[in-house]
Image 1 (cartoon, helix red, strand yellow):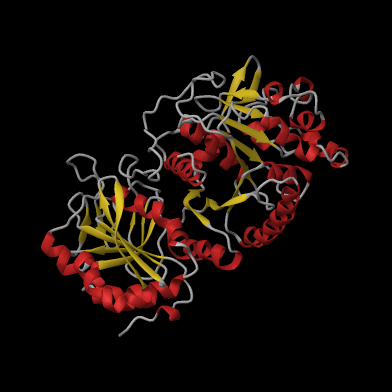
Image 2 (cartoon, helix red, strand yellow):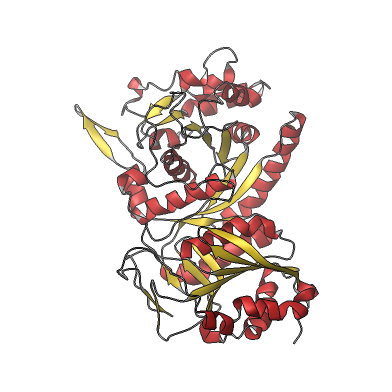
Length: 512
């Protein structure tokens, strides 16, 4: 059977017609030597191929993982996926990676902590190149050369072993995502077992990197950047996990050594509460009403960021937060009549561009002025979503909203906002849901709405609720004292997910 690239019209057909029906049989792999849609923590592989196979297969430090195959839509530029493939190969110590969109086939080899392109051809050249491909990643070639890779590098024990297929030894209540296309594999790795690596142009973040305690000291940050990066976290559907994402992502990024400012632009002030700035249980003692984001937006000459921002110790090291207040909704019409208010935040952030590396903006779940200001100001957009029907339908509104604001940004001679993607958030940990429903919902986002989906998934976990509900007694008052999940339970699955999200976001914006 010959391969015909023109018959691959989408990613699913690249998988089925090129990889399953053509490449795997040609390379000598029988169905018991490869698995489709395999998940390791936040890593989701299209195909994982074995040079040798033992049934039942034990996934440990001696397992012969040899080839990862990743299929992309024919319209996708493969250059955009090299860093991700590198992460897969180096994190799992896999020898080879095949990356294809049907029109083009590339094979990369892992060399230490990097990868190297070893073969590249067009889909229409596959017939004449198949022997070269077979010599590189054919099953017999790999068996003869005994090219086996270590999956984990966690000492001599096999505590991370997983039996395949279907028998999982992992941390309790630690679900992963499987697609039911074949004998899918699911594994959760201990924190030290999966490491992500940065792009070839950047150095990886060290886990024990010294974190500066002084946010304002000009020499406290080990790496300087020309310009602060501003990320708006927005969805016009409420209850999708925006605030949870903002505060814990801020904590995760702060712990990498970046200087972080969080701005609450929602009159519900959920982020202000979640970062522990509400130290009163009676409105009579409200110390936020006279100095918050509203004052910053309405005054050109007064209320600079240095005056409005408060230090929050909800995470260690601390971050700065510009609080919101419920009175924001009362002043929306007034601010709306003042054109300068729409760009005031841009101007004031320009004055502190050397004091912060990352600004995260929490937004209201609406199409109002404050959401508009956030997106006008931001360089990047992150869209949390629980992937439920109304949240998915709301993505149409989000895209139209972004389009209208980009027209305004164009008049300001600002580049359009770059959408980082949809973040699957508040996702059920039910195993059947994860295995059967979640993959379909994830796949629907790019197919129906043309938006990318982040690799990281934030599951709905008790730890996220508990850390946000912490209180303490001051005198005869009980006041809110929330902390980030990374400080509450640093070794929890929830903390791990936000660590991965932080690394993924930093990599996407070129700050990893």
